[in-house]
Length: 343
Image 1 (cartoon, helix red, strand yellow):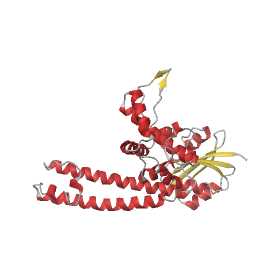
Image 2 (tube, rainbow, N blue to C red):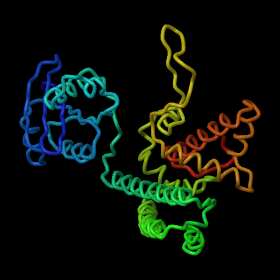
Image 3 (cartoon, rainbow, N blue to C red):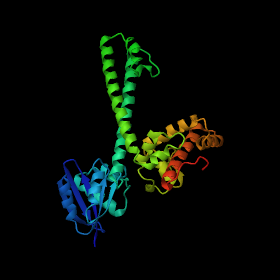
């Protein structure tokens, strides 16, 4: 059975699919409306064993699961758009050409694959956690806007009293302009409503998190609370997607860049900006919480040892954050409980 490599360019109105053979010759070329039934019809028309390459997008997970139900589809790869600069930056760009390039990249094995779970419930949990994080970010932005508005009106505010229902009145009274006071009241109303939604989103996240046993086990780790446990589970999704701890570090934005040419380093080493910033945030908050814990734990020991060795607080902190990632990943992969004397 002949192998076909298909590139699928997905748009909100139309899709374009181009399939090539193992030698790179175009065997199929079709533009069609963005529709489930039409997509299945086009895929079923392909003869041979088909592998499909689609770029990561909102629709990618749904399309991947749909295509994997077709009898002739062997594999569906969701590629990272950043790795497809050949497509994005090419001055010659259209849907057909994009689909052809996706097919050729798949044929050559030059795809940076984005992990998508086979279980729809895992993806749903991730979306719920993402929404909770997004709303939390909105709360922070609204608070910053309120504080900045007070400063613009000549009222120097500090601390968090100005956000509370009881404390805000005394600050608003210091604003001389009636219009500015009314505008601030509108921003407070927006803050109050967003906080209510934030609480509902967090409650839903906690409820869904109880369905996953690793979330409860993660909370045995010093510094990891229910929110951090849910976030780590949702964004990692499965420990099997990584083979080495260094891969998990990089995904959590805790890996180090290693760029060189002609045997010489290109710039100084730094943290790799690729990866998931929210996972890095989980480990940073866990680090701060574990340091405040009265009972000594392995993360406090790791920090002290790294600080003694490097004499650099930032390096010691990052080493400890990597320790959190390693412990959580190992517990999950090995289906084990937390043991403080290990490591």
